Length: 128
Image 1 (cartoon, one colour):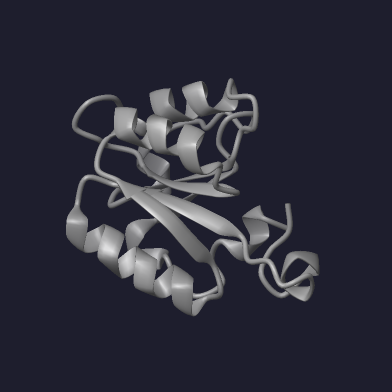
Image 2 (cartoon, rainbow, N blue to C red):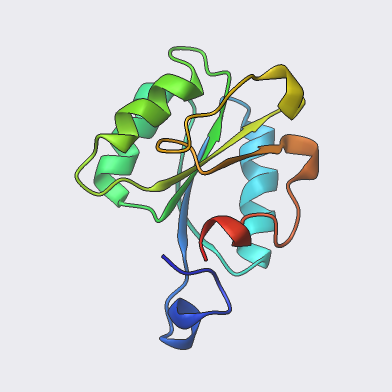
């Protein structure tokens, strides 16, 4: 998988993203930011089960995944997505600090970004 500004962009393709977060305001802000950064946001989901279903329908390159969801947590969603036929890159987001979440299984989760630090270019390292 490649990041915007690389081979995908040179071929006229943009990396696709699914945003999974229970806060509509964060999804809207993240969508605006990601689209301004050259990503194609293909969908949104407000809970874990919907995020898993939408991933299976939309096949995004990357899932921006909230750690705390109302039904199942982001770690369980990431575990299930890792078992998919075409697993996406998963990046966790949270209002918590990285130090508060413990260890991350790198086979399931590519990385973590605090919500306050989601900025232009912050997803690029995960898709290069």
